Image 1: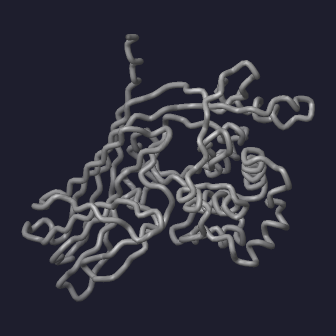
Image 2 (image 1 turned 180 degrees about the horizontal axis):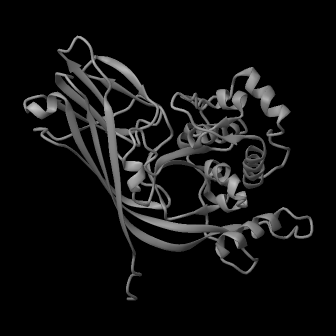
Image 3 (image 1 turned 90 degrees about the horizontal axis):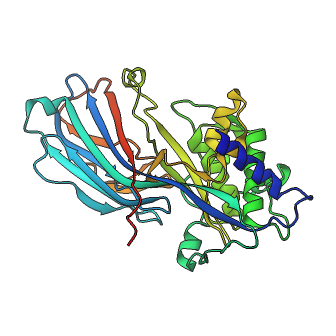
Length: 364
């Protein structure tokens, strides 16, 4: 907590007219942890009479603070391994498809999936660099990657005229000469001031919808933050994943549980690199009166990204149609069945995490 408060003060200090010389920023690594996570998932119902299951899971990405990532999907009773496929979005993310023709009686009404992850997660904080500090050179994004994270697609929408007017009215248009970091922080604070945290099962998380409702959960709030930055030519993306903490017993008893799922953001600032921001947690923590600045400029080694950006666009071989999956923090499933009517399907999941500190490499 002390670290967080110090960083909040430092970020505030950078914008103070009394400190005009504080203009250079750098990342300072705090710790690296070795993370292992196992997601257990079950879908079940009565008299489903399933002929075949189709399961989609995501391959977790390597990111600036998430390295050496491994993903393993196991569908219980499946005789063939998952097949990696590309989604049709501009990101062309890798998704695993497992098909399970039903041969075991239990799979007529249920399916069990386990997804295991491993990674090295680095906690770091953005700190001001004094003139004497050596600065690591940060290469600009390559044109293809930059264009990718400035693009309007999926739930990140900003070209609509009404949305442009909304940005003007809410003072989230970039000022002449305003740095990437300063603009992103101003947007972050404006969202925190004007938007409320809310959740419902059928929530529209498009950035345009959030700008009208002025409330959403972490996914919708992140879409809004990313859309504003992209509209103002700052590359940005959202990170969909889970907290590096096991699910509680209370959560596991629910049919539709939070299970440590969350959404974070990153934006690319010139001469700094990918900077973390967590507008969803900042809004969620409002009731506890936590300084929102502790959710800006800090990568905690307490969050694991399962995929970058929402809207996974894949071909479903069971229906021979394209489908849009908003998020794959939890496996997505489809069935073919001989049943004439299908009752409610119950979904349960569990998230177990182990982590340990990474020991520093011995000196040579």
